[in-house]
Length: 497
Image (tube, rainbow, N blue to C red; front, side, top):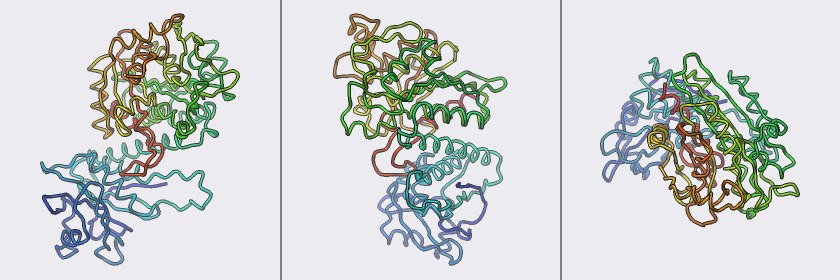
């Protein structure tokens, strides 16, 4: 387990395997930010010349390594490009990314100290989060010996004994731990994480962190009339689950409800995906993982915000018992849906959960789902789409995402989309698709919005792009599950308090 501490030690004299510093792009050259003065002196005031001679340009994400200035102290100096800072100020996300890049440039067994600019608690939190998230590795299924213990991390700052700095470090540790848990769930092969196991993990962690967890099994779901969850899960030998987590502190300032899509594997059902389209579908439960992880983190931090969370879990498989195109499901609450595409299943499980969450009368519902490929077409693989029934609610969540360092962009829910869903079915209240090729993400959002009770603010996050990284690692983002939305939800709760 990686440990992280604050220290007032001098960057040039700290005993560690590697020291990470930042390099800022300045015109055609580079410059060093605050906090590197002693290191520069240890190189005879020539550190900029040394780095420039090795080709450092200060470009964001660039790594330049040089031997440490003092034998027996730091073995390696890792200089990470921070990009240009024309106004003289670096964004916290720049620092978070630099810390992740720097720690990945070191071996996992090496101890690493960070002499990045940390003038305040927010910068300390950003560096700590980046370092911890950047050190993540999923090795559970590696046959080679992967028992090498990770080295310790140290943040070098004059604020090491400051109360706010210590609180910032604690929040970073808890948040990064939640992100790592979510990444682990998403990366676990679907044969080892069915709804039953996923729900059991939530129960176990809830007991550990003081969060009440209730699980509705297939019998309870049938008795309660959760036709969406049951309909999606009926083709699988592994039964569905609805998990409800509740965290209720004393005198909460607001009540947030989180809802997550937990399709532990999505074959598309009888509307079968292509073989390549299924490869990353173990990640279709990333929304449920994120809302569970965030809830546990909020509880661990003791934030004065009531949180009620619903994770709708099912496996979407083709079989003789699977839902067929043109089947009609009666959702929780009584609304009927004609299933015209069994691969548009996430909205079905979420519909049930949104009606149930509305019954708790929260001040705000936020759902998180890897819902549509259409959102990836619109925004790419790094940006989530934010939809809402009020601009105020949407802006509140987008602002939290920006503060947390997660990319998000507002998208509309045109009124005609719900009309199309209603008119596309001739036998039920609405269909689960519009039957048109365009605006798939907007139609899915319109579908979900129809299951939220009037008068309740609601935001839908389509995280199909950023929840899973098919490419190489960069910054603090690894290959595979990213843990996207955990930081946004924790920030949302923290900002409300």
